Image 1 (cartoon, helix red, strand yellow):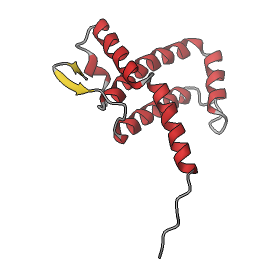
Image 2 (cartoon, rainbow, N blue to C red):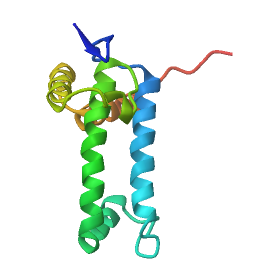
Image 3 (cartoon, rainbow, N blue to C red):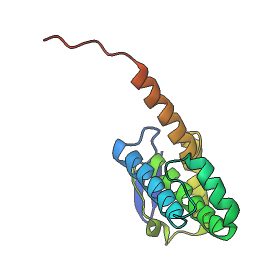
Length: 140
């Protein structure tokens, strides 16, 4: 099955290329880091990231809400990127209607079995399992 975005057809996949996954992870990390760096004096960058994020969100609700909106946009774009095995920039969806974009996101989520957070959670689980598998020693 394929999906057309701005006159270009993309095949749905459940196994996106490593480069697409890596770019999405990196973008999420950069976004979170940029958000937290706005509050450098209040954040312990050596502490638990979730605890520090909750602290900032509690003390700065307006900024937290803006960050939340950007996360919603990111999750939508990242989910579509994973399912179509192509990294999309924000402006790649500018010519789509909200309904078209919502329909595409829904199809991509169904195909992946969830959104980007679900996919990355499964990907991290697989990665951890693979690291725990012992590999035989190489012969000299």
